[in-house]
Image (cartoon, rainbow, N blue to C red; front, side):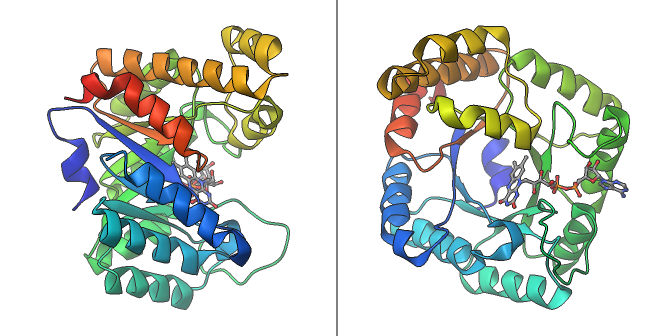
Length: 285
Ligand code: FAD
């Protein structure tokens, strides 16, 4: 099933992102976690693609398992910055062989090691996937501006290029203040971006990782959230409950303001995904 058909339904949708194992010994644990999350019956699930494409085989395999064993619509992420055209087309063929219909087409983060690459920007990948005609294509967007962008106007202009190249929808980088998303939506609509913009929400359940996550993503933490981390960050159980409550509040506010689709960065934590799903289950009907 195409993601665009799911996120354009009248009823709101909640979906989850998982990441594939980084090493072979983690396969079983990741598979079990992803299957538990799939059992929550999300609108769809996405599986990330390791930086540099190192886990490319796992991304397709996990998508195929989720789709075949749990009947959950899936979206495979695909990055291009460290890839040749041959590698990209081989991955597209693998996705087609596994009947995977949705691709999140990304540039990927630059890595220090030199790789042969035929791509500079995600729009080049998107154009190529669109020309193939087999996939519903999603792209990434950044309510607080991509860290490499000179300014927010350039960033939104490049976003429009991704829509023109063939993106059917965008998913946002995480944000912790909904006003950031609403302002972004206003700016992208003004710039001619008309496709749906799925809100990406990260439940922060680990105080240790939050600073690193914000540094990489460019997301800022509001004072309101910093107070929570200051107060409960020392205790993993308390921090998890507070993080779930905070993410739930964000999601309820988004739905209440007419946002149709929310994608939750599950960090492969079934208990967190389950708690959020339970908190908003009535809102999804
Ligand atoms: P692009 O759209 O190419 O943008 C990258 C930068 O280049 C931006 O600053 C943009 O403004 C600029 N730019 C674009 N076009 C031009 C142009 N023509 N001229 C000049 N500048 C230009 N990373 C992974 O490794 N694996 C994943 O699975 C993954 N999933 C993600 C999912 C989501 C929803 C998000 C938000 C991010 C994800 N990332 C993932 C991270 C992403 O790969 C990085 O943020 C990366 O740095 C940018 O990728 P992009 O596709 O947004 O790139």
